[in-house]
Image 1 (cartoon, one colour):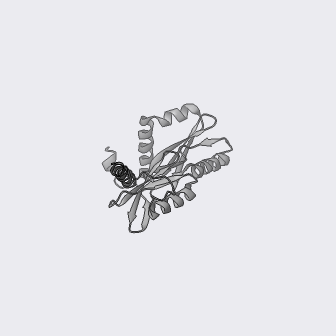
Image 2 (cartoon, one colour; image 1 turned 45 degrees about the horizontal axis):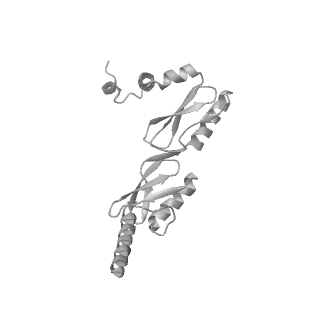
Image 3 (cartoon, rainbow, N blue to C red; image 1 turned 135 degrees about the vertical axis):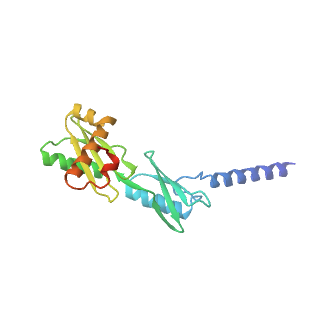
Amino acid sequence: MRKISQVRAQLRAAWVSMMLAACGGHGPSSPEATALERSIDQELGKRFGVEVVTRCPPLVPTCSANLSDGTTLPIFVNGGEWRVIGMVVVSDVLEDYVRAELADLGAMQGVRCAPRVRRVEPDERIECGLAQGGKAFITVHVDGSTAVELALDAAAARARSEPESRDLAKASHALENAASGDDEDDDDEHPR
């Protein structure tokens, strides 16, 4: 009887460990992590300077890379090759960019763009806080270029953060493009 209960306990332990492996129940660099998962963990960890734990479900072409700061990045896998889906920006780069713009204006101050690593959509607007109460608004375009708008005054920053003012900013940008002769499709978006 004792042998049967020992065998059952061993089978149960083996089953639990198989289920944990199938569900991605492993940590960074554990023996259960696949070579692909370890490769992604190491490369993204080196690139972003944070601990990464990647999960790649069997027979699915996407993995999920979970960064220690809470960010989750979708990963497309094709054979042994992989890439992050979408654009990723690191706040250090954004903050350096805004500091340089502020220096050009003679308005040096601290800049904080959080979270440190973020996935962004093309033309998504990112808000960064300025130490003296203002904000920087950065747009990252699909080609990787950026545009920055600085609102040094706290009241102006709050106003530019409101959804209505974002719509006004888009309309203003469309008018600028129309005035410069770059008004393709503007008639559809802004009826006269």
